[in-house]
Image 1 (cartoon, rainbow, N blue to C red):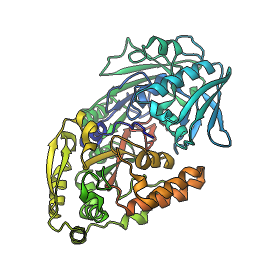
Image 2 (cartoon, helix red, strand yellow; image 1 turned 180 degrees about the vertical axis):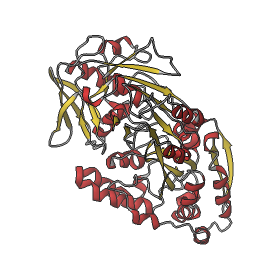
Image 3 (cartoon, rainbow, N blue to C red; image 1 turned 60 degrees about the vertical axis):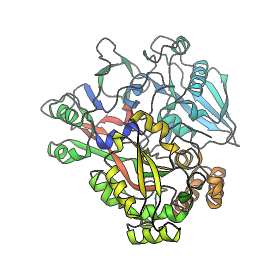
Length: 503
């Protein structure tokens, strides 16, 4: 199965160019009824089927309600679907819908509207892969819908809650106008007259919204600010209340008395796209992959390039979560002598030549990669690509520098990082690794908590197989004024508005 992942190449700017946000705060430090949020990127699309769930969260969560939300632990919680249940075989998901909800154009939210939205999301270029296992969507009665699956999908509710179940007006879907004009049932309405697209988006709070208490601010301003200096200065001058932040500014932020919230968001390292050696023979030898893992000093890379904002680790399951195993971090200690020995044992004592892609946003890591691989005799020829072309073409090379989004949900991590075809992992090749294939089968056969020990085994196995070369997991960091609390959610590059609260 192929799932189209969140755009993480663009999000590399979080490490090389970080941005901030803020809102008007009086001298006493208590937030006013307004809140001004600065985020890194402009809105991708107002159409939930075309939007990016990485940075579009603050925009979309203002105007749309989701069927499913996530809590602070990334567990699925009710949205417009107030309850749900799976059939015994996990192939039918039935959703009990909230009643009495209307879209901002007056259209009712009901089962017919939910079916139309889900069909629209399933057909979406970006959103469709969330529903790749859904074969049919049916109206059961006026406030009940059912999703029928071709196979059990333990990540479905998580993906829906992450940002793939926003509900829009059926009339707007039919008119194909959502890309530029959102029409939802969310806690706010988009004030087009007061907004300046590309600079500031203003949202006015609705009265009587069913989830009113979750959204305490009267007016929300969202400003895309790509420049870290401009962002920090906006925060300092009181033009922003919340900021997507540069980790290098944390000391100054603490000195200013701001709240600082951080959590791991991406892994940084080298992605191997050909672990079988079918296109590039050296990488088919586990000793070569292990040698490359031993050659890089992840802790030093985190300090020198990652501003020490993250966790030095060789794992792609997020640090601090149930599957993450600190003991595995000792599997590939920095050891050039051992790396050279492994290369020699693999038949490459003098290394080999390899072509890797490069783009301007990855240049902070390029010198270290060139130097480190050079110490193993691996001579890199760089192919320069534009940032836009990098995501399209990087995986056509046997290995490339990668910054890839993490997921806090273990089943989603297995699906998105190991088993499914992605732009960064075009050849999952799990069947070529018997133990990996066996464990994947066991994980897919289990459900819920029973999956966790199996996924831990899988994590250990792919680490042992040097599935990729992870240097570290990088944090996303957010600044906020006193009285405003941001809760980072691994899987969202910027949290939705339910995670921006007074406190």
